[in-house]
Length: 126
Image 1: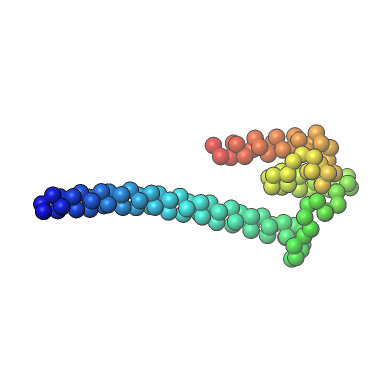
Image 2: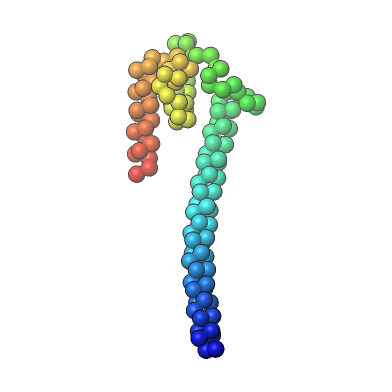
């Protein structure tokens, strides 16, 4: 009879150990999820602020068309706006060809802006 009690005690100890390991994994997963949610909230706040600035710059309150639908800015006096917009599009992840087509820049200029943007991101993270 005593061996049954010993076996039961061993089963309880093993079960407690397995529950402890599961709890550690769940706590680690919870902390990682909280970190990801916080990063997403920060990104959302950044995007909301950028959207507000963009709305103020354009003087609009309604959503604007997607960049593909926007006409290119060809006028020579708006070059600063074209470059500002090109940098914004580069930050959003568009490739050089699309940035060039949307902003009315040469592909070489757009590639240079993308390289400058990537270099600025790397220095900003260090």
